[in-house]
Length: 116
Image (cartoon, rainbow, N blue to C red; front, side, top):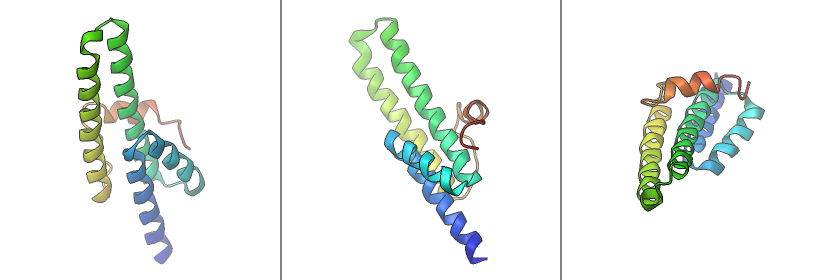
């Protein structure tokens, strides 16, 4: 029983780390490759989905040459990332596997082969 609880706590720690920053996501991925927590794996995919969408939006806005609004769009993407990360961390703390709104289901399906 103690070992199951220990693995559950490690999975929660890894999942929280994945939502913190890009570096945190890489560290969580590396940590989970050793421990193999399915709970952490789910949240790593969610965090990766958030990051992918944010980067894609910023690249898209640069491609269509909206340079005068790039600062505002970057700030908006940062705030959205923060908002989605808070939702993700809240789900982790409640030990839930709820998808992040708008992008969670697609991220989970797209990044499924990752980190097996």
